[in-house]
Length: 210
Image (tube, rainbow, N blue to C red):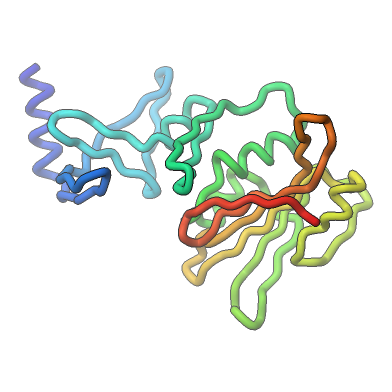
């Protein structure tokens, strides 16, 4: 017990204090703790931080979920945190669609995105805004050709590809906004093309294509 308390004291002395907002404002300390998952050491990296508050360690849910074979997403509108395991019996395109919803997030750099999704199918620069855009074509047929920056809704309907993802980058080289277009099956078995959009403010929206 003494060693544990001393470890907390040393950690507190070496770390800088940070304020985090929950339902009320509290003071917590950045906590330089190491992580192991099933005996394998994992670096927390620059994207995440662990906190210590009143002797309790608070860890980033997404980091823990990813290292346990799952993913996490926060829906601000619904006030809901969802943790979902990676699908086992699914094709590569379905795995990528799952990764977009539960592994991709705003603030990632290009290396991190490629680690999750691989290389994009198409890259371009919008001259008017000087904003870089990446497009991914998931489950596309071998002869699939498309050069647009709007979703190929008809192609998805025809089955030319399973889904399409567009990533907008900010001037710092981080993910700013992204939208996924894919086929959704309703309760009565009919299919329609719908979108899943993460906006620059972190909010999530979805809609059905016309």
